Length: 456
Ligand code: ATP
Image (tube, rainbow, N blue to C red; front, side, top):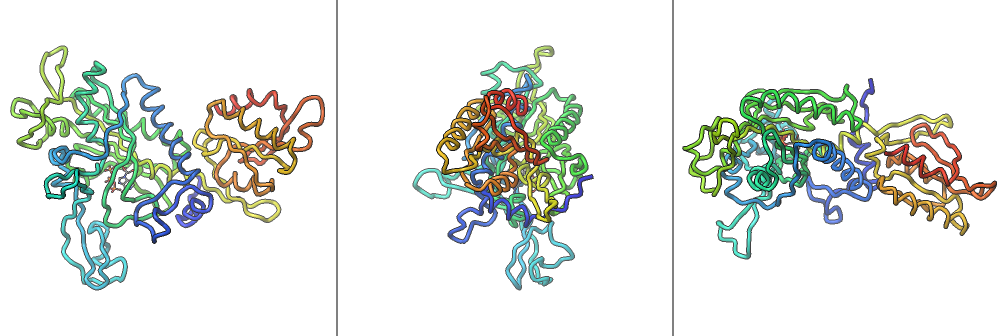
């Protein structure tokens, strides 16, 4: 079993040092709970998104994609229940003024100064409100979406009409969500601006529990295929008191983050709650859940059952994963410290090749040698055309430093052009493997075949 002894400080330090993740607005003191992704972080995050999209949209035949807006109509979030119920209980410490989520307080003590002089909990809505247009009259406001899901529900009929889908089918979306968390913490684990990878999978009522189990299995397997080991993943059904206002049942996939096992993704059975809530004339419908009354939307978000000819609302199963939590889980799993024979320590990110920010670093051994430099640049350009991701020309001038940097950002292969490249009948380069550190020589003419075999 891979015992996870990586600390959050080690991950934060690597992320800053090597250009994965930075504190947002750091030069002005930073914004709490908000982060920026640097050159290698953006590649890692995009690769994880790409892997999700490929598995959920491209490799299935029953899911369509969507990219809905972040700014959301107030009525959408009123009828979805978020305006009234998307709250966390907030407690203040009267002595040091520290704020805490009531459900995170242990032994009725302030987690900053240990005082027991705490206020009663009061509900705090987590949604960010913003103004549309120049006049702030307290009416023309909208919200930054707290989940991407609502854009899927409000577009349900548009997608259905445009694609002629029949149940079961899903709509997938990856995008930003915003929550004014009371206590953002653990680096990118709990933040105020984050990305979600959400699928709303619409099914016939009555088949929902079966599909729920199916998606729990599917999603657990997918996280494993991204490199998370089974010992570091756990399924946890939520208790009735933990369930969100829309959910009949939710199972969380927990990952062993540096701070312990915590939620990476939730798979919820949202029933017909959302489509029902956004539907006009609810009185004429048989709806399973208690929905938002007096809805003034202009449509019925359901469909005709082709066999019974009855109008009905689908149920929906929602696998909702956090992209930033996914990045943190993958960094935690991949971060490895190795003791080398020469007594030095090596830090290496053992990322799956498809997630690695840089697939191959091409390094000229002598940066002042024109022949070597131009050959290295030529190789970089030709490998870039294979479509496997970013290839980086690495002009450090110090091969040891080049390898160390690439180990720390998880580059699976380094290709070095050196003086031997031009010796012999055919031109050759050295390939160095990240995990084993083994090196082998290969003819430049064979590189394409080798790289295609390795990555595709
Ligand atoms: P938590 O209980 O940890 O606050 P949640 O149950 O409210 O999370 P969901 O509403 O189910 O979270 O959101 C789906 C996913 O979005 C979560 O599994 C998580 O990966 C991600 N997520 C939610 N809130 C945050 C946040 N503040 N920062 C980063 N990711 C988040």
